[in-house]
Image 1: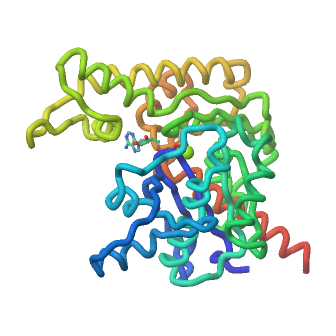
Image 2 (image 1 turned 135 degrees about the vertical axis):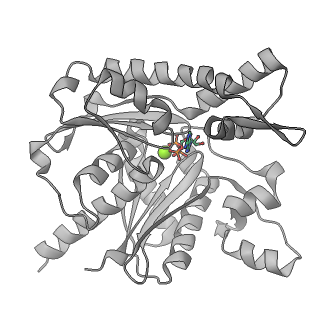
Length: 331
Ligand SMILES: Nc1ncnc2c1ncn2[C@@H]1O[C@H](COP(=O)(O)OP(=O)(O)OP(=O)(O)O)[C@@H](O)[C@H]1O
Ligand SMILES: [Mg+2]
């Protein structure tokens, strides 16, 4: 079995993350904005060539995804904020576009298994439906697996880069807090098995961005949109008339809303068991906003090094472990 056979896509509300191994067997990840628009004809040849990689057909319509959708058709671009997101052609466009970009970046077309994720809250209800939709979009020869997104971060922690357990799965229990854009997901793994009753979700980084918009409007009469607010959470700066302005104090206040919501929910879901866990994994793009507060409560909280890619890389490792087990059994 080759590690190029398994690829994974974490289709999030802010960005699609991808993990795969390229033609030389080197592990890679990338992300692109989770933005979709209807495709339009581009007259500039260089631009058109660039756009081709981010153009996908779903049903009988062409869509732009990622940067091309942002740049060429920003007015009509959409991201999914409904629970039925997976049913939309936009979601399928992100999936097909993600796979297309993986194949181009890998320099080969050897993927035989595609691992996808769902928010823990939606997993049981939508898992089979997502498999159906994905199979219809990418073809029946691809083996499609779906796992709860936060469990991806757990697999990253316990499987090595080839999908082999680094430690005994059944000997360890972990909590996972995954701070995404739209949702923060909580999950509990007890002795290697997902304990659904420890799962739950609350708001993600978006609430901090929304608060920042409001705080800046109220206190400094500055109007920014949500995209700018999100960027400011990272840079602690905004541009006004071409000049950078420090907004670190406002960012601090905005982040406090997110932190208290995440910490309250984490405590509610895990308090009874947390001291007996091996640790609590903190992952997702918003991890570094919340990690310090969680760590203060729980000294065994650990933050993943590149938290935004934790889920997708963990999903890839999970896929490898499944494929490897199947190949051994089939021998
Ligand atoms: N270094 C950083 N500091 C603060 N925020 C960050 C940083 N990097 C990314 N973010 C923000 O973290 C958020 C979550 O990113 P992530 O990619 O995990 O979300 P998502 O998977 O798209 O969302 P969801 O899981 O809710 O669908 C985004 O809003 C992003 O802007
Ligand atoms: Mg996510």
